[in-house]
Amino acid sequence: MKNKDDQIDFNFSRSIDFQKNIEVKGFENIFSNYLSSPSQSLIFKKHFKLLILELYYCWFESEKQFLSVSMSKRGYNSQSRYNPNAISSFTIKIIKFLKDEKLIDFFPGFFDLRNNVRRLSRVRASNDLRNEFRKINFSNKWNINHRKREYLICMDIRKKKIEYNDNFRSHEIREVVRNYNNQISKTFFDIPNLNDSFIIRSDKKKIAISESTSLSNFHFYENFEKTQLISGGWWNRFDIQSFGIYKNQLIINNNLTSYIDLLDYFFFYLSQKLDLKIQSSDVSDLDYFNIEQKCYLIMKGLNAKNFNSFYRSLSVEKKQYFQDKEISSENLRAILDTFQEKNSKLTINFFKQKDLRWSGFVSTIFFDLLKGIGDINVSLFLVKDKIYFPVDFGDIIASKIQKIIERQLNINKTDVKIYHCNPYDFKPKGFFGKIMAPKSNFSSRYLKRKNRYQLK
Image 1: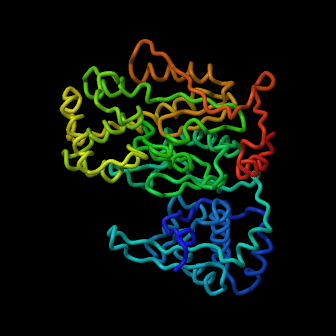
Image 2: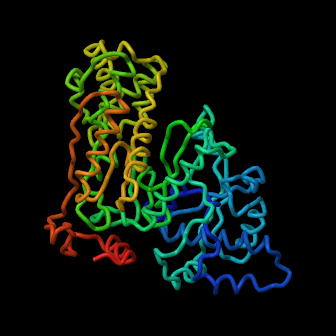
Image 3: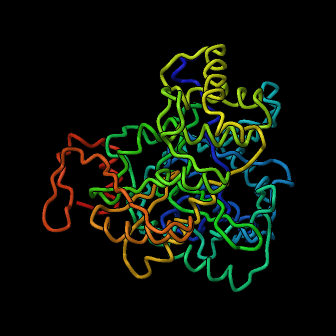
């Protein structure tokens, strides 16, 4: 029996990204060793390249991470607009080839009886392939993504990704989204004092921090009217608990960083959605929770079918809301009962399966901001409900956010508060406040990644 620390975490995995650029330079030695046979077709070479690259990126993101792969033809759609390389079920043959050549560790899929779901097969680079990977010098100048990568995702009413036909509106949106992704692909966004290459959430899932996990997909319904969701970046995978730990530690380009918290406007938004005037101070008996937890608890109650489903949902996510506090099931039920009784003005709206579409509101604000900044060269990041930006751009961003909020919520005047991330005991130097930091405050992982961006 292996030690617990040595046990394999199959949950630390990600799907194959079919939208990578397979013409990246630096892998010639690996390709030449296995793609020299005249009998190998172009389709073989294309699929081999993608899998080797994805194995590399997966290993580069974290040596403990796996790729989840489908061994069924139904797992592939070579005609999809989200698959610019036209990768097909031929991938299955390449996986078997890599396994036979001892280039991967292969773990077959299975049916998870505990969670009643089918688990995909997992693969990772073998020791021999990892040794080859260590000879490759990653460069943030690589064009990691395919030039036709689709960052604009269309959803049906069930929020399932669907194919779509372009129109004037989708072309207009895509231009904004593509420019934004070009900007953040050159931007260093990280947590200086994080030692590991990943963040652990309350559900024990891991979030890998890397250049190859730094992109943003914008989700719309078929009418392309409003942004509904933004996904794809490692920063989009925080849960309430992990974000509570790191929200003030995020840094852009090794500079002093600030953020605007859109939850400051949650009760304006809630009042409009419920046609009920209510403020944060009106919500009582939630001493266990901070403002983020309080707002998400309210959304969960509004969206729940009944009290029991509300209670069961909180029982599963207890660590997100109570963190280090040990709350028994009985105490949790009592807390929720008391909250419901003391806040009847609000909770009379609970258990009506009402989706506030808060993430859509937040995503729309961010998209409108991206359109509004025009040619201003500034890197912005939306992390849950908070918009991060370099401290020097605070006045510009705050002014634009104020106008967008007033327009979206139809209010005459509102204040915008700017919050500041941890300065790590650094002092501004010069007009633009460049961070000059003692290296002892930084993790070696952070410093190594910072150097790839050639930042001082």
